[in-house]
Image (cartoon, rainbow over all chains, first blue to last red; front, side):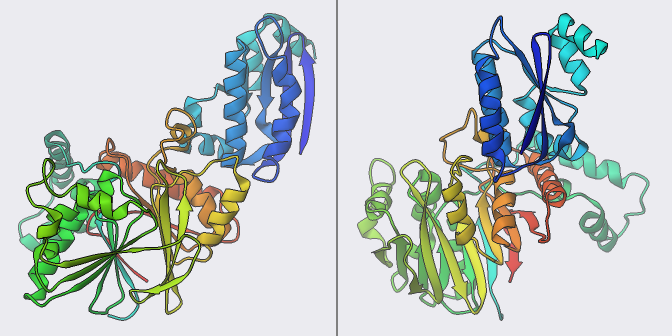
Length: 124
Length: 321
């Protein structure tokens, strides 16, 4: 699956596109891995821009849960942002809203963690 | 009766529960609030109001007996899955309807955790000479587990004092058997001490009983095997005790599954009906009803070209196939 990325100061915004299902969850996991390694205290923060994701299965939710768990253990910040309504419902029904930091927009997520990144984002 | 009728005598997970006084009071308040201003002056109008206008969780209860499900194909012999506390109610029903005529019972055991065997000491047909009870399972220690809960210090009646003829038959997983009027195939499941699901087939109808079964999200081969086990089943009775979030975090390795995984497996298997079972004992009727509504919505928004009917089992529910 496609996983675009952009850096704004100390925040990396990753943008998966398409369905995160049993066939693509592993690709997402592999794509996240190098960024997660740097998602730690004093290093990068991660924002997953989910605007391009129209479906996520339990296997995909597992990848997000593991990513959030690892980021937390490393003292990093990880948020999922700009979730489509259907995916938002899946997160709520599965109760993953209790496990993940879900923000309305990428800007909200960036603003929550890094003023420098927010400034860089708004400069374009 | 033609076809196959599935009766749920016990549907609760882990331990039997009852509706609390506070919950009953909330139901009464909700019902009377809805009735306010209505002309409910005859028993018929009241019944029509209760049955037609009140939500299930207000007018009814999902019940609290632990696992016991009957598969009724219309024959004279009884077929059960598990001997939870629901078996006590089933046994009393048999006594009330059989007029003393000896009966034959076939019981397929998922495993021997207490909530799945605790009904047997209170299963009245076991005390009556002339009845024959055959208990099938894949565990080596099945007979010992059932004998152990009879007699001191756990129970005042020794197993040897049971009047019925009770025999045990060991099955092997992944083998098909012709038993009790069904083609039956057991399957090993992930649960503490292992559990076994059963796929029952008869006259083109398929029921899968799969409770106390955890599904690991990183086990793609395991998911494929279960999708095959559920393949085109008319009914899948599925352990949906937890939310997905709980099942993969604080309750990981507790041996149970979720509504979300149940829907996904049934979608892949193209099963027709998912019946959520082994309800979390801390959930009241409102909570189970909410989980049911959410699960139906999840099935709807994730549906491809195959729709899966979704229900939540309750003590006393019958499903005709």
